[in-house]
Image (tube, rainbow, N blue to C red; front, side, top):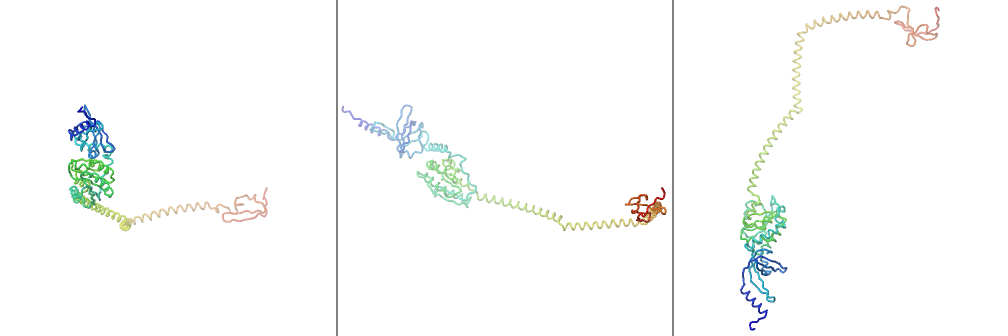
Length: 419
């Protein structure tokens, strides 16, 4: 009975033995269950095809994790075995978790990428276009960094007229993500045309602050177009995917969004030469059109028409004189013959007219009423109508008329000469 011990002493011995034997070991297995507690602690279990073990990770260690574990994930845990003596239970106290066969940062990157993609952070239709004319730019980066020097150098070379505002911020370290997000939100209030956030090259750990979700949230909420210029060309970070434009390097960002002063000057020179050619061509065309209009105005002017009318009148006058002179010459040469012909014709006409006149006189004499009326005879009429003498009553008026005399008479007495 000397070897008999209490339950508590047994659990205490087991605790001492296990915790002393299994310190800082690595265990790999599949996540069987997982619970992120509201306290910040992580409770989970891992298993293989034969057995399982409960695990715990305290809040301080969980805060340093870059990714979330999920059921079914194959992981490697680092820590020690601990025993809870009141219940005689043991668990694996975890200080670090890595995905099996893949780095933790790589897994964290893929998890955040998928989550943000599902939220629409990478959608092309929501990306803001870069302005064609940039007057003011904000650079969110470390004030003494080589990346800032490179960007300012390109600005001075390409577009020195640009107004530049520098927002100094950490771009590496534990608190860098918070500072970058806050600096971006501040830069968004400065009324710039474009905001460039970035830094030079470095390791994955150095650049990791640009893979943080709070930086992605800040970029996604920006009203000003954002250019992400982080690391080298091979580095593709979450900030690159969320930003409106991704530049392979900070220097490349300036070359992508800023115009080239020398190229613009050359283009302006070409435009100036082309403008001169166009103006000269149009001026010459206008001069030709003006001359044409002047000629048309001259041809249609009253003075010119008057001059033309005078010339035409003079020409017609000369032509008329010539024709008249020609005809007068012809008439003068033909005048004697025409005179003889005229005299002969007139004599012939006069003879005919005299003969006709004699004939008319004879006919007139034959038809003269005076020659037809016998002496002592007259025509009797009343009211303009010829009447018989027998129809005239006593005391009535009537008219007596012969070829030369008209008498108004009154019947004083009426008597029949014979029955």
